[in-house]
Amino acid sequence: MIEHSISLVVGSLLTLWVYIRHRFSVFHACNPMDILWLIALPYKLLGVKFIYDQHDLCPELFLSRGDGHTNNLFYRILLLLERLSYRMANSVIVHQ
Image (cartoon, one colour):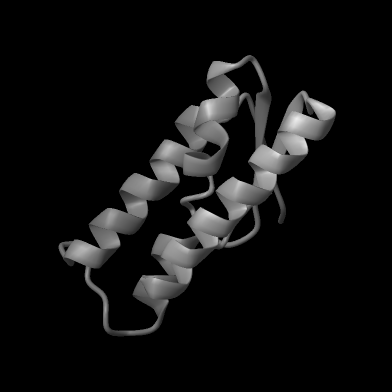
């Protein structure tokens, strides 16, 4: 949780700095960390396109480790975050 929180704060500050200097029109983010849409959200409201690049299936990875069950709270949170990443995206890239 601490690592992801720091990543969100630092990522937000860095993208703001780049946006102020260069006015980007596309925000490309990949997982793991299905929370990067939080950094992209303010830019999306400014008309920046958000491309979500799916590398890992985080909910499925959680289940594959043997500890998780589909009614587990962490699994449900991972599903929600993944779903939000898809909904926020203007385009999704999926690797096979």
